[in-house]
Length: 465
Image (cartoon, rainbow, N blue to C red):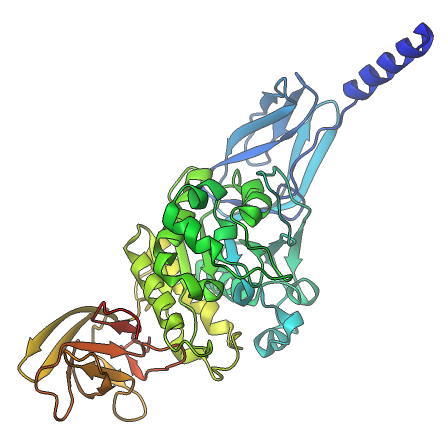
């Protein structure tokens, strides 16, 4: 190569490097919401050694940060109480302005299709909202469906102000969750939707956690591949979760499980590992609230949905988690996508209002089986979260079944007494176990005084019949 041409190329590279633009990830952009009263991270890319001034309108002091030799930079800044809109200025060799920024509460919303479902899927709840939904204090960040075999550092997305246009394609559950928080907390709300219909929890979990656990690896091998969604561990975690983990959040909500009904035996282990991995990536134990999957006819196996719901209930033992039970919000058990997303979002919001924000007087916990005692030809059951007593709507309690040592369940007679249920069956002298709403599609009619449905349960651990 001629020396003159070589010199020109070197000069061109040096000139290009010297004018490399200051760049931020997509999640830090116009219209975003930053977590209030917190230390949040701003980060991005710039030329190695480039000094960047960070000007925050709520802080008279100008902070500075220098890009590393790897051309990356990050800085921790403190945010004030809820407010805005603000303009944040970052000035290096070029200047970036982040406009219309709000300070409030930021939540990640993830899962499979019941979290993804939006007005574009014909939801009546969303259609009714469109004329009245415009709210400058609710912001959406919708991450498109993407996979990667290694952890990524950015996504192709942007923040949008809530209006009839942006709501149509956004998660309905996430919107109704955010709308209630916005109303009850009276602060701006930022919602990050990262969901993909049909996906098993394995794809949202870092691959090593699945592949290095023999039981989880074996279960993952049983997943049914489909042309509609990924199934290999870690693929959506790498592309749709990892890039946003530097973002300070208040917590996460989750609606998923239908695609794991065939591997329910390992779901609690998988799910808790997934939650733990997200918290480790973010660096703190944020609250994680999830929806128990709804009644649905999964086919010839009449119990696999119940077993998955049981695994979700067991996850409540994991720290800082909460579960919204929605057995009463289903009007068609042949549709895996219940239409009522408004009340699902509201129940998740009630968990956050009470458990995260300390609001008093919020009903958020469904009644939960606690213990049993055999008393001759009866079984007495005790329930938590049943203050004010249990009530049956529409007549006698239904979906209770009782069995003796032969493990043959028969319909039970049930008497509700405060936080107890006394269960028996004519002709059964030595009962051993009780099940409630413990099939794929059964819907019970027992509620606590606050109107929340009794969580499906079984007292036995007998192998699947």
